[in-house]
Length: 195
Image 1 (cartoon, rainbow, N blue to C red):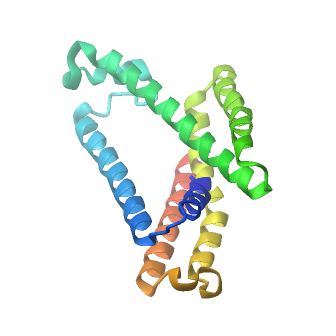
Image 2 (tube, rainbow, N blue to C red):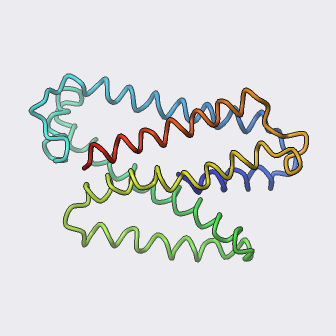
């Protein structure tokens, strides 16, 4: 998520003793671990066949019975609820922290910004007739929202006057800009698929 860039930069600066290599390694390990998790899930469900409607949770849960038996619907429900709460907490806390810091407000006020973001995030899906399409469209939109902060962070990390001895070296710059370009190009592909 775009605001996670700012949250991580802020958290790194607030720690005081900045070990940039440790933060970079932590971010890389987290990104690789989450991608491996998605690949494992995709591989585990690849044999479900083309007859499974992945937009219907009830059908998907019953299709997973070959993996989890009669507990499949319950495990699927727990997974969906846990993922939703995790996303709500992570996204709202990170963005509220970025807003409070960007506006120069007291750090303690981030909780009120968090509530102001979370309540609509819980209420809108309840009243929206097709929450799955809403989520998919928002995921595609977030890719393009990432463009501005991503370019800004890349420029800041490359600026020796701002970063001093912590400026990104050539290999980090290449990896960063290639990764950002790849994410944005996949967003363009997603828009083409949705249209």
